Length: 149
Image 1 (tube, helix red, strand yellow):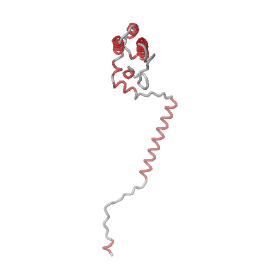
Image 2 (cartoon, helix red, strand yellow):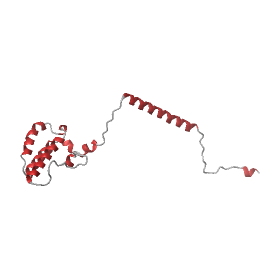
Image 3 (cartoon, helix red, strand yellow):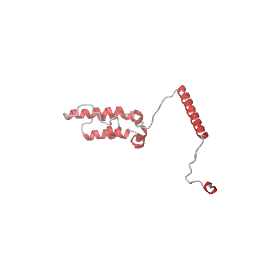
Image 4 (tube, one colour):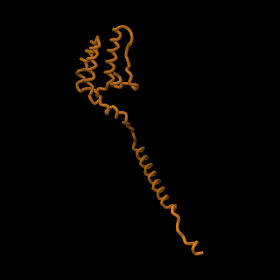
């Protein structure tokens, strides 16, 4: 469940209750884990009618006693999650978003520093252009010094 919804940082399922013991304890653990999974999902990721269906779903989870009942409850929950959440593109893009708050003073300082850096680059280019450039010839020049002697 947790891998599909990625509720935790490690994508591990957090069981709420005993994982070993009597059948009644395991059923209680499944119920409480499923209810906590539902509460951890933001309402914006759920279907528009989820607030109307939620009460009936909670009573259905409370009535679960075997694996088929839990399966039906999990399928109903997965059906009420918006389809966009299951797209790999949607979940992959979430990691690349980064919001930063910049004040007006910081923005002006950044613009000034960018102008200063641009001016320094232009001065460096002008300085390099004004320096004499030496050309290395690979072909020797022909001369007539020896012939004149």
